[in-house]
Image (cartoon, each protein chain N blue to C red):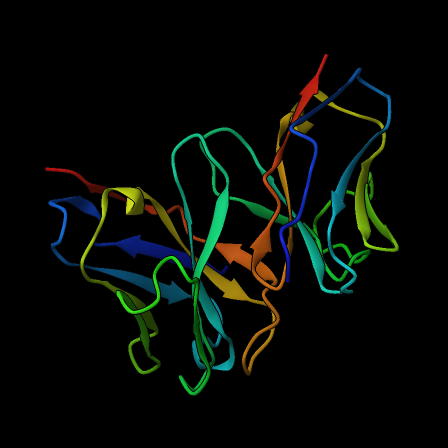
Length: 100
Length: 122
């Protein structure tokens, strides 16, 4: 598994939708993690599109070619965090989401 | 409720050793692969090591291969990481993480501990 590339930062206003990309994987074992400030990471999406029990349906995943994406709809202030993609133990560099 | 509680971190001099522990509860520990993931403060996540449910399948990141040893005691529901020849670049918060799958695992980390901080400095 080669390195995964994410944008360093994204931002959006409350209520908007944002998408974070993760380039460098053709695998279906892509997962996404949310890390709130000072907290441990939390699994948000696994196997590209699946949501663990308890995760809001505002979070969704997709993949096209070698790029996976995490979309957050109806952006809320509590979504402000770092987001990491991962495939076979290789993490992306992380994306800082700012809610304006 | 799944709980993972790490311990054993601290300040250690370069070249010395340290052993981290992770106590698991709230799930059938011996059914799942387990991992160590680390994070330099303010930086990104790095997978360190993994172990299958029966300790048959073990893997390490290149950055720690030959220096770190992962192990588990299913009877004690505990995961360990023995870290030898520590370097300043090993300074990080070390997380214990549970895999969603048994066997060798699929590197999907569905539960995480709060981490234990390791600082390597003279």
